Length: 217
Image (cartoon, rainbow, N blue to C red; front, side, top):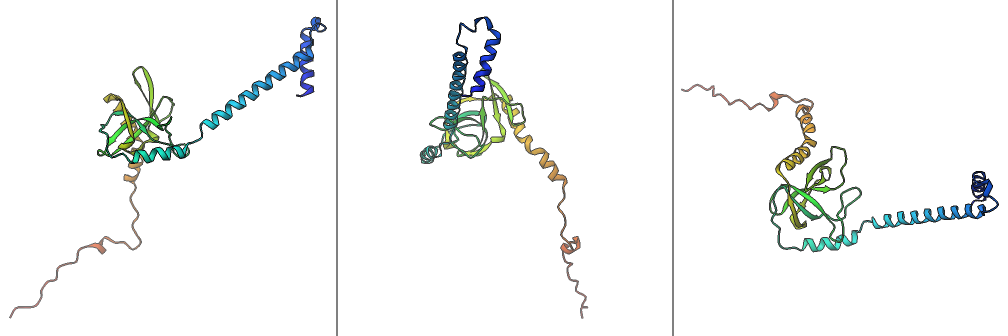
């Protein structure tokens, strides 16, 4: 504990309470205040460390869970517009992770390819003001479809159905998802591939049929 800080606190207290300075132990008060601040800082650091440790990715636990999911013999029936809890697991870096012991997160079935495969968009309660979080209201609560985290998944990851999204909200999310690529597609349509050196349309023209110039006798 810094002696200079204690002296500063002592001077401040003495200046504001000069008439009571002889009555109270301001040195002890100053030291007690600093001790309390130190304890608060220590508890804060401990809480931060616990939070960081709690967020450590449990890859081993997810690998065991994934083996069980992969061994499922049946496939769950599902439809587009439905919202399901899905075992999306533990992933790399900023890829969306699942929660709790099931490694689950709500997803929207954006596209059903067959009874085995679907395009899923993870959902979140955290609303962000950007182009990748598409907000919608359901059951009096706000949610966001995180279109930047869309991914192809196997239907064996689906755990249980939550609700079916209204057609209007589904259409808004689908339009935003497709809109990510429309500008790039238009650029590709305008750009013309360069022709190789020496290329000529005449070089790929069909050869003429031979004309028989021999006279009949």
